[in-house]
Image 1 (cartoon, rainbow, N blue to C red):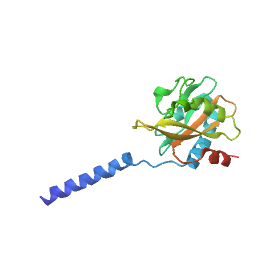
Image 2: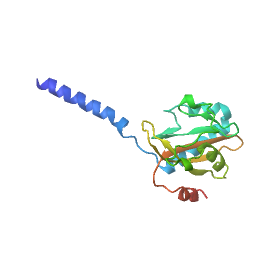
Image 3: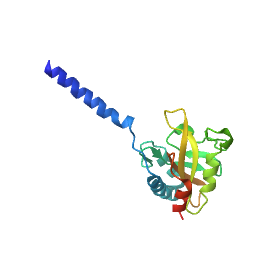
Image 4: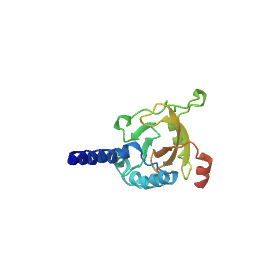
Length: 172
């Protein structure tokens, strides 16, 4: 009887430990987002369109903790690379964020393409739902243009407090 009880306890412990990553995913910091984008730039600079595939893998080198790098073709205003393959080729020209105040909704993709033209890139904010949630949350993203291409790289995090102005001031 004690053997069955001990086996059940060990099995329950393995299930709980195995479920832990699903319940509490580690959050990425703004510095890690920035570093991830800088790591991604040479892939597109050196490989061009052939390098886009590297950004489509949700478990690849451009996914970190709770963020990932996406690639937008600003000339065509389409999603060029994304871990969710259904979004690749999506027309982004009329996409609005999900700001709780409809009067403040904006197209984050157009804003990212504009901010990316700054020599050091830039941070933007917009509202979107976290995966598995139905209420939009404030998201901040770092955007950088890949020189000599129409591509920008974007990665972001959900964050209610970090100042966009302070982050952008650090880029100068």
